[in-house]
Length: 405
Image (cartoon, rainbow, N blue to C red):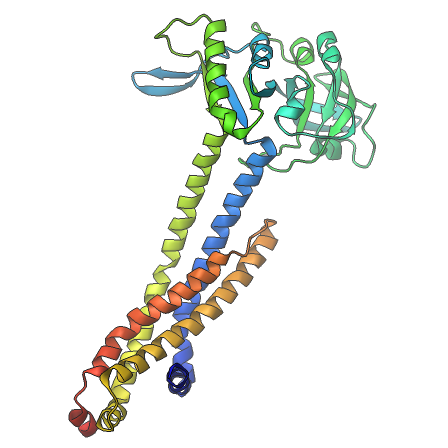
């Protein structure tokens, strides 16, 4: 029976090819738009996830405390966590490694080439904490930190801009007119979450940065500190231990607010993911407006079809066709039009999303959600659009229908 219904529905819609195609066009555009928006949303979320994974999701970030005046946040206060604090935090239970950053922005010069770079004064554990790896050469050691050696480990952008095809290991670059020896290069990291170039960086012993590049009246204080937990599920307990130790070391009495801030990378990941999900859902809803237009087009076509086939409906009823058969026939035509349009729209949506991803240089996943969305839209839009025309056809009086001219 189902095969016969679908066959007859196909004969009916194929009799008016141009009209059927124009009716499908709205559904095709709507589904293609939804598929592209869903794919774009997933690509963004995947990019965010990969970016955080490159940093490490089991990371705790410690920075200056927020300044709040009259209930209004006024930025950040002065750094309050010292190098000694960071080293002490490394002794806590479930802590794998600790590190910190003392930044400086300078022009790096080699020969006739110069380039603006971000210098980070840190300790050797920075590599472990932030999941960085050495491409060539070596990383400086604790011994180098204590001796404030003029050593530099440079990112791939700095390698390309200053050295080109030359091997930078062992060569000297100049920062603020002072020479520093390149002892290692970092593996490429790519862009960060904010679009910043993570490879435009030079790592140095923090003592070197303080003594030779960026003097400070508070040289022992870190701008940002990092604590890497051994496992992601240990984050909360490690965070509490970190807070307790810092409050103790800073001699903060009960009731006094922290002079530092603690952020868990897992919380940051969830917040960014939720924003990405809401954005992609909003785009999909906006794209779905065209589906409403498409469903109106199907409904209009089916109503016209009922009017054109009034005598046919009357003849069928006169020959004994039950009302549910008439209703099922028109619903089948509506669903078939919607299904074909949705399928074609899904194909075009996947193709365009892949082309867009290739042009922008991002990997766009082909999600099973595209198929689910297409099938769901096809069924729902087909039923909703065809219901009114099907009811109209079912309720026609056979005598009046046979008299219809």
